[in-house]
Image 1: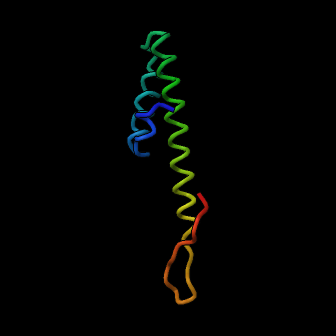
Image 2: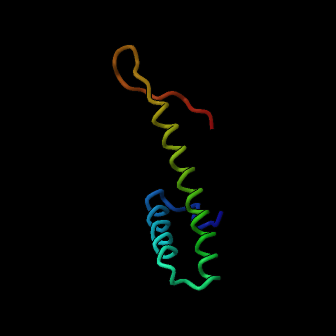
Length: 77
């Protein structure tokens, strides 16, 4: 995955992915540009999915203690 993608937040990556999809759907890109955009879009999709998996793991780690307060479980990295 490209270094600049790895440093993106979920929201940044999703916004760029949406722009790429619109560009590809528009059908106005030259073939080579469309292929490059598709490859970047695939990397962005992978990055977004990874961020979502990490967020889901954090949410699932939240537990309620016996006193009713919320706490987090230690998640393995």
